[in-house]
Length: 217
Image 1 (cartoon, rainbow, N blue to C red):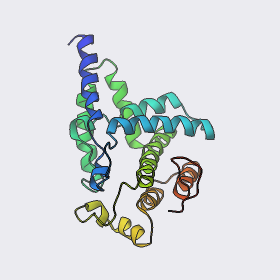
Image 2 (image 1 turned 120 degrees about the vertical axis):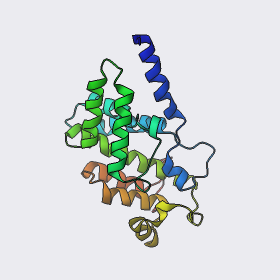
Image 3 (image 1 turned 180 degrees about the vertical axis):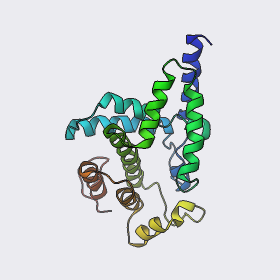
Image 4 (image 1 turned 60 degrees about the vertical axis):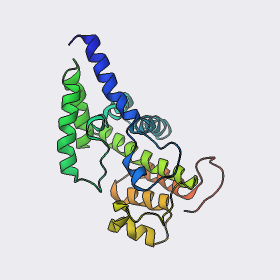
């Protein structure tokens, strides 16, 4: 293929992420005219990374983080958005890595990009850890925004497998709202550092859409 064909082929494939709706929102029956796509999530993670780097002055290569986040979901253009409640981490990693390799292997910089993707997945470098936290916290914040719009009815979840997870049930049974459950689940599962934990706590205890009124949830 020519360079021009490779550019177009890669762009068109990644463009599919604009139409891949985030599975978690579908599972929880988010009632809204427009629900977040994977491409919109990717944008959100990058904007969150910029803000976290700015306010907490992390000693990281932010350009590397932005690039990691740009490609961290490209496999979903092929395999779709699979949640932790639908497939094991190991099985998802296997099919996603194969998809990413096939997507990137015809680009001249494909090997470098694939190494960056694998670095993100391994989560060992400071940039990979930071990018991972941005990925998870962005989802939590989007959940809070949907909750503030009253988009989810917790009494209408009988066919939602996620709602039967023991940790999720325990949090909801304790009186947590939907977003309160989601953010508490994230804090317990994703090993945030103090800065990410503080931002999560702030979002949990305040209304964030207009950022001015207290809302204990």
